Image 1 (tube, rainbow, N blue to C red):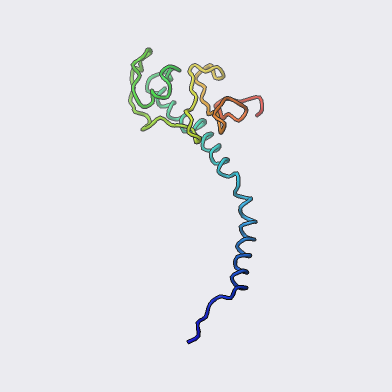
Image 2 (cartoon, rainbow, N blue to C red):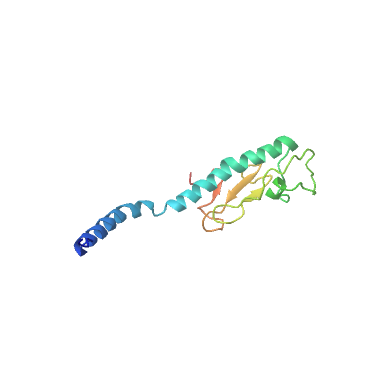
Length: 140
């Protein structure tokens, strides 16, 4: 029985084909992880945390204060004003944005004076133009 294997030319042809396919696909995928993180942060700010804060407000008639912060969603606040009908914990753990930074919460808000401001400082972790917030900015 004769040993049959791939020739060097056949192997090089396979490597070239894989390289061409990778050259077409990789540029389309670059930057997608950042887009996914931005979308996840936007979903947290505009939907997920908004619903949880809404449940807290529905039970207690008010949102947590800035001092109580998002920790009030996990542990019943003891500081004034104490929530009269706290039915938590509303979350298992205090969420962080996709870059590992805490969400910025203030109540009453400076942008949303009727309730709260909630934002993520985005990829750079500092207040800047790439922030994701629950209020409209001038750039939108």
